Amino acid sequence: MKVHYNKRAYNAMRKTARWVERENTDGAGERWYGNLRKEIDHLAAIKVQHAICRDPSLARYKYRCFTHKDKWVVAYKIEHSQFVVYRFIYGPWLDY
Image 1 (cartoon, rainbow, N blue to C red):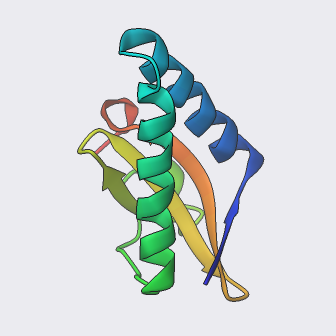
Image 2 (tube, one colour; image 1 turned 135 degrees about the vertical axis):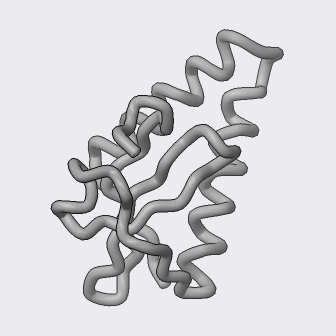
């Protein structure tokens, strides 16, 4: 299944990768970003369907959520045979 990134989610992922790069050794941000993309690609390939997000601000759009590295929440939908990533959010900021 093809993966598509909403501009808002893509920008949040890249911004986080830059932060990881600043806080760690050279190349850490790109490795982190690559691992995130691999995880998303894998989930899209096996056509996984997680539960609707528990956070009300995401649930109202019927986004499905999973966590990356137990901190980051990826909100997505499967639409027209595409895995569309809509949001990438730091988990503790959400209202669970």
